[in-house]
Length: 300
Image (cartoon, rainbow, N blue to C red; front, side, top):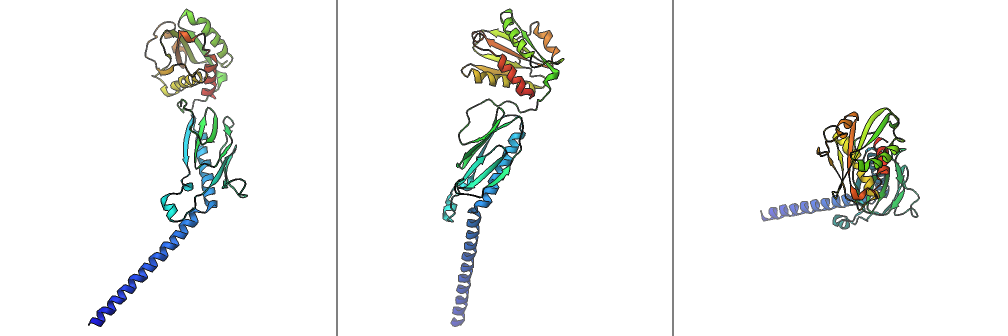
């Protein structure tokens, strides 16, 4: 009886040992497989070149400014990667005018890069660049698309609603809400006459002045609010580019200028923008170029 029990225990121990050996063998095979996939630079070059290109397609399709933070985690060596002896990957990424090219380590060491094309737009300029960083930022900013490793400078992001239109069919008006700004508005009006020569009254730009510290750009918040806000935002952004130290804000109209001729004139246009300019800024702040540029960007 004792001999039988001992034999049974020996068989059980043998079974456990074989089971352990099988588990170890499976673990080794899986580890080798994972390491092989992780260290397969061709696979990851294909993956990242396609992924970056598709991300750029999304950026191109968006009407507004876009920023995408792209973290190439496969290039990082985590604790698990170290334990499994997975080597950190190093790539050099090139963003060209119509595609991404990715080289193993660098362009000098790799004769067989992987590439993937992205969509092009005649109105959007691609800024070619390259990096070996594992963290990149894809961006579309003011009609330019590019790749960087640095944080983008803070900028105003305007609504992305599609507002394209034919400027040859549109006209724009400028209205002074006080005698002190009439000469200023006449100059702006002469500039806008060269942009829109159509018969459709599109936008009325009403100008007012006050001694308040902030120059405020009002937009009609009751009808087509997003598209109206986009025009106000584009003007604000362009003014701040020229005059970064000035205090300029946008907000929905609060009925603070319900006076003639604004009340009767604003209904003759599709929509209107009212700019209340600080009096100390008038001599230093030529807003005609900013308005003209905003119109081109809005309808372009």
